[in-house]
Amino acid sequence: MDERAFCENGFHPEKKPRYAGPLSAASLTEIFSGCADWETRRVLPGLMLSGECVTLCWLDGLVDGVTVSEDVLRPLTETQRVVSAQGPAQLAEAIERGAAYAYTLRRRRTADECVADLVNGCCALVFDSLGEALTFVTRTKLTRSVSSPAVEKAIKGGKDAFVETLRTNTSLVRRRLRTPELKLEQSVVGRLSGTGVALLYIEGAAKPETVARAQSRIAAIDIDGLLAAGDLEEYIVDSPRSPLPQLIHTERPDTFAMHLLDGRVGILVDGLPLGFLLPADLAAFMRVPEDSAMHFAVASMLTLLRWIALAISLLLPAAFVAISMYHQEMLPVKLLLSMTAAKQYVPFGAAAEAAAMLLAFELLQEAGLRLPDPVGQTASIIGALIVGQSAVEAKVVSPIAVIVVALSGICGYTMPSQDLGGAVRLARLALVALAAALGLYGVVTGAAIIIWYTAGLESFGESYTAPFTGSDSGALARVLIKRPNAANKRRSRHLAGWNRRRQK
Image (cartoon, rainbow, N blue to C red):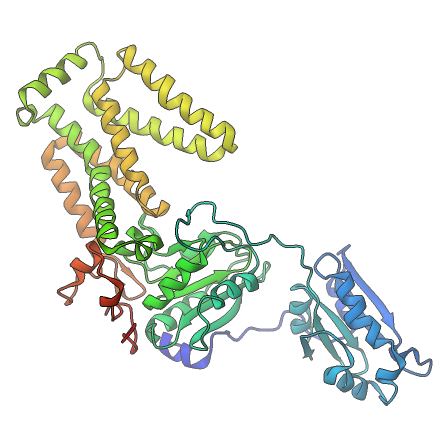
């Protein structure tokens, strides 16, 4: 089935039932055999001795005991509510029409459907004689509350961040986009984890073909568990072996909503406090939400600084190695004499210095991330000040090499995307190796290969370098220079569907 046909036929794929046989309390108990948290209770509706008992089932820890007692058990055992019911069929119909207090009720006729509800925090009222069950949403409220974003600092934006609960995350997006055009389609991924995955897009703003591609690729994932971001990302991107990020990650609902308004498609995964957005392009990784809250002149200056910092972080160490080893005539005389004097007693060449300092910088960064915050900050300070200063004084490395690597690292931290920063660090080491082998010719060749490789990537049918590459003549100016909000009347041509207008 092609992607467009799949979109028309629905998001949920046809699956074979895992649990065959009739639905009953005994069959459910057999399915959950060996599960110490499996609980059942026989209940006499209306406390009528002549009536037929039903079985209430749930998984302890996933449901809220107070909700089960107050919204299900209490009304079920009140004589006035079910006294007129003659038989199990009428009893089930009376409960469906309001005899129970639970706000969400579903009738399940197969064991697969009932098991799916039970593992998602529902309790099930099983009617053995009917071979059916009524499930009530009674999941526990013991989840992490909404807090401030930890990685993406909010200056003028919202102070809330995504959490590990899917429905909480969808509500955070709904509060910012209060329109029925915001569509939400949900599926389950993972044979054993049963992880809920929600696909969000604005009808008209997003391209239908992009939505179809996302739906078909998510439905094609066939793994045991979806527990980490990589379990989703590597299975749906166009080039999973590429080090460049091909999905936009964010922990901020306001950033997520902004990208949806641009025409992108969003993905939220139960258990992950992140939002994924597609298609991705290089320009999107250089944007921050605060740009729209600043004066357009200030935002344009900061955007240009980020692009310049990207070039410096990528090319500066390689250019230092190439000029120091092969092209000393390019340096001013005073700078050359200063560098020569500083390297007079250093036993290593410029390439070894740069490579060693870059690797030490990566080790310090990794240590700072893995250690607890107070210890990580202390380790970073010790590594940057004491070890670095001691290495310079001991004539192991030259001061100019420390300056070049430190400036390259600082420029790398200006990039809003951590994933793009990781790809830049990897390319930086490769360019240093080319510079040590071929000089500036190697640097230019490596830069050309990076541009050629990046231009050949696609993300869900769109060019990774869009809108730089395309028929839109003003795209480059819009990426590098922010226009006033009143002048930004249309969405980008490579993202938007039939509704390109933002404002009048």
